[in-house]
Length: 130
Image (cartoon, rainbow, N blue to C red; front, side):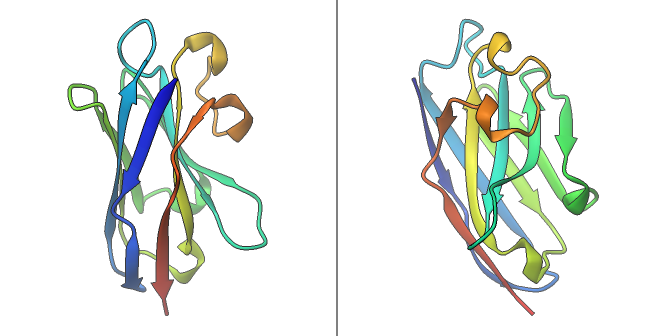
């Protein structure tokens, strides 16, 4: 089981930036690095949305709504996942969750689907004011 702890959330004005971090500990897969990691977000009254994912080799995928503004990255030595968020908009307001899938068979295409991730952090709040 992987333990995930997010940090870096906060309140910013529209156009501002934040950087989220997620530290992973515990079992992180046979390779020692979680196969697929991702960021999800959930706003009140809405379904959880996959924001971005990243393979352990660095390949990434983004939701259309954040392309060009958000960047996902990972430091496998530090077992840390990041989400750099620039040009934030009020619609980005949500609780952001870090997720990990340790094994390739769990999410072979590293899709932004919450059901394909077995480990989750507790969430960090991001609030963007107009």
